Amino acid sequence: MRCISCHRLSWNTFCSRCQIKLLKPSISKRNIGSLQVYSFFKYQNIEDLLLTKHTPQGFLIYKALAKMTFKPFIKSFINNSRDIVYIIGIDEIINNGYSHVALLSHQMKYKNVKILHNKLLAQNRVKYAGKSLEFRISNPRDFVYNGLSNINAILVDDIVTTGITLQEAKVVLKQNGVDVLFAITLADAKA
Image (cartoon, rainbow, N blue to C red; front, side, top):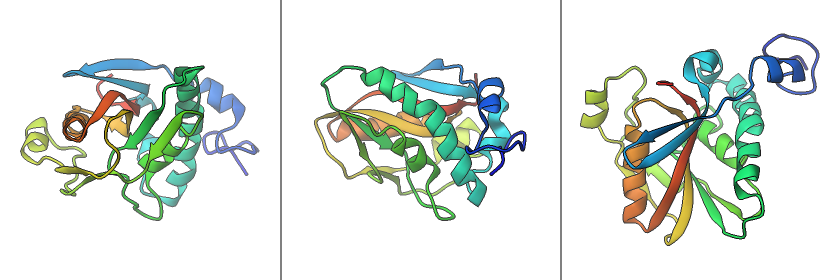
């Protein structure tokens, strides 16, 4: 196999050199209303990789990015805690054979961490890419949650732009007895 970035021979999707040189995460934090959102990359730094999310190659790329970012993050966050934390991916709908958000969520499997796949789904399938804030506000995702209540959870999504989706998800989860600790995304489009 070859590194997707530099095309050198590699056992991994990205060779160790590219992981260090090109894909070193720099965690940023944004407050969107009362929700803290942590992101690993600036959107513009990995835009080409993010745009593969609905392609067969995107499966390998998202899985590799999640392994480099989400997995170490949750290990560091949980550390020696005995509290159980749930992971809830936003709208884990399968498109072209996989869900890119589910790939991110799945890499957070760890002790005392439970993943609730496909529990927060949008009824409105509208696409937000390239749309204005006004459009996003006028066309809510209308999330439905069918998971556990009385839990602490971390929200997972691939990109945060305006934060409307994350805020709407938090409100729905709160109405269903879920305390959202914070959200994490691969990239922040505003950073």
